[in-house]
Image 1 (spheres, rainbow, N blue to C red):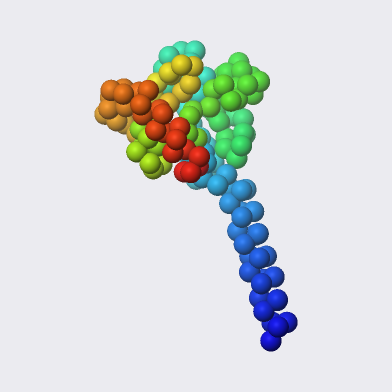
Image 2 (image 1 turned 60 degrees about the vertical axis):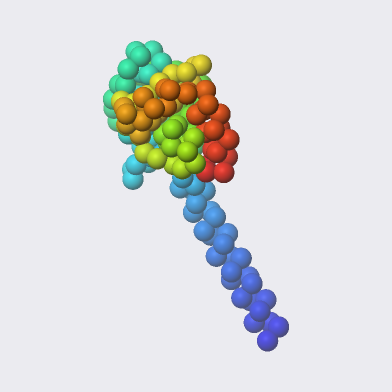
Length: 151
């Protein structure tokens, strides 16, 4: 009987390790990406900073980073991102900043965005972006507080 318990513990532990490994390989949900692993719905994150607008990326210029694929509109944008990805990544893994402030992950509309203090924030919709802009600093504080538990 004692031997069977030990075998059961080893099997359970092996299963837990396998599940944890799969979760890490999939990015553990810390990056908002589609079923193909593409982040920001295929939009070029450099466009928000340089062109002050959402710009669709193309498959030709892609970069894999932390379990997600980022698409860019040009080789120049790809080069800038690859040199310093943390500078351009959307906050909260690309999930809605307002949703994160409210304590949950929510999808985004790439048209609902803002660069605040040099950081990219995405929102669920233009209406949510309007609500987010009413107390941006307060919502960012709340989202920063919630992100470690939700990522």
